[in-house]
Image 1 (cartoon, rainbow over the protein chains, first blue to last red):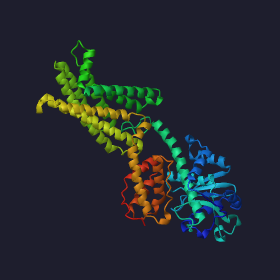
Image 2 (tube, rainbow over the protein chains, first blue to last red):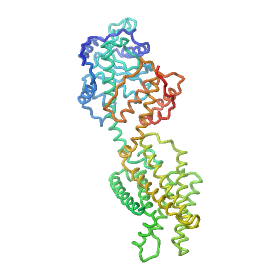
Image 3 (tube, chains in turn brown, orange):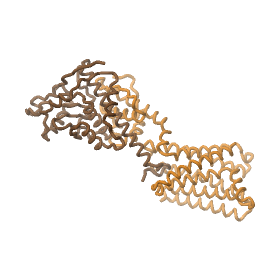
Length: 229
Length: 326
């Protein structure tokens, strides 16, 4: 196991891939329109940093967090899950659907008073659901946020919008230096968030499937009957 | 041997049916359509199966009506055949068509003529078998036509539950159809004396086919959760196909866009299928615009189907496996 103490994960806005810049701009515009400031993000950022170990059995961290979350999968709905996460984190959590480019399926942003999860609402609902769970996993697992520093042009010369504390779910490479510890941490944390989403949804869907099959009661026994009453 | 097998399956069927019907009778929903009709049809099939074997029918008559020369079992058998064919036609075919009305009329006429002839002549057994042959043949033709008509008017099964029921239904109806057609042919051979009359091997084949049909019916009426487990081999094949599609898509991406290759041992087959489809949805948009696969996946995604329905739709996509990755 390697231990690390990454104290900063900061990128300038211009260092983001072009497609992500467009999506980040949309997020910033949304936050600005609602007067949600980033000015206290530094505090949140410091809280979000932990000593993170890069190890081979990161899945154990995921299982521990799923057990700690103590979620009732039989009652699963997105609203129910978000309420549960809000209680768990002790912070308000907002879901926002947005039209992103193909490069971004979702993002999460930490602000002073709330966490915001953005998802690409032009994509399939199943993907939206997966993305939302993935982004909340970053918050639950206390993963390192990326601090996107905005220059005056992008922040509209306001100190309030100086940096965006965020995480993007994107196939675009976020970091260019591949052999850095930062890259390794980032990759493992993305893997953990994906594992969390997959295992959580596997449990939730198992309950849903059981409920659906029980309701059907052999309704499709012979071909003409296509749906249960 | 076949008689013993028949008796064993009859006992198995009635035990299974009794258990299932008592489960459903406690459920208020059971008294509504379609469940009430479905289970009555299954009940009728059980009786039909019971009276399909001539030895069993003869023993039944001997036990109940030993002093009277009347083929009660035979009459009951013909009645069950008629009711089952008629109800299947009523349910499965388009009731508004002229062909449907003609079918019902012809079936009813055949049945009434058969019964009428029984009372006019004393040769019950011979005419009984003649009527049975006509009914068996009609059942097979009617069943095949009804299923063709159904396929023409209804969509292909779109989710795992419909596919599971569809597979077992196809097996059950094929075996029943083949079996009764065999009995009809053998009856014709026996009455006409062609090819030396009754063929015992054909009788055995027909009865064995009917036995398999009732076994498949027993499987089909199991609770849906149990029935879904029988689909596991098909679902595994489905997962392999989806994996090949995923590999095709990823092989066309820039290496910098490759997803994390994390094998998750905590997922079951459904979880792995879900994971594969998520990866497909994440990355297919990065295929070339002139790639047919991309167009088809876009159409599938646009329809906002369930995960299960999408997984079946994606199976039929054509793509050429990549010879080498970029």
